[in-house]
Picture 1: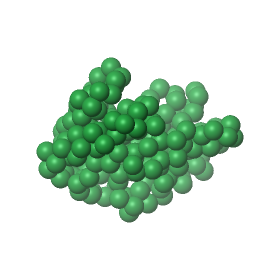
Picture 2: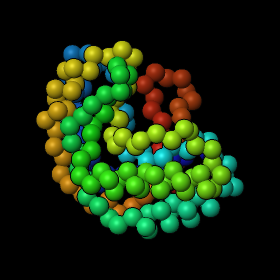
Picture 3: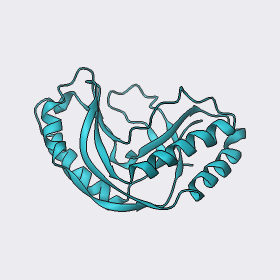
Picture 4: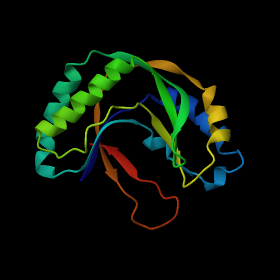
Length: 179
């Protein structure tokens, strides 16, 4: 199964972001963007890829320890950015040091469970809202730049199962389920 550790913003914070994404979807060029599914919006902390079901119980225990060693902290969705011309995202502000620490602890928990993780790189907090090939991000970033979401307390780390689309229908989204 395909897994990742994540923080899930509360519904009211996602509703705020949803209002901004609604505006983005009305901009010229928005039709060429594959917008991510709102029920799946999350902050990925550690992507594990394919994981054998046999190691999931130990992984849950280790992630639980990682979460218990991290005091609740405050975040808000804020602004936005892009990864090249292929991904558009909402940014994150608040106690980013605590979020990075939780991401590092999640990565370490997976490694200690025996999961082969990708090369370690510095965590960059973001919530992906759209993907495209060679998209002009400028108009979208102008709207995202002014976005200021409300604060929330992060008090939970979740393990999420990701099921990739299999139908071949353009625009079909992965399905996510808290595992």
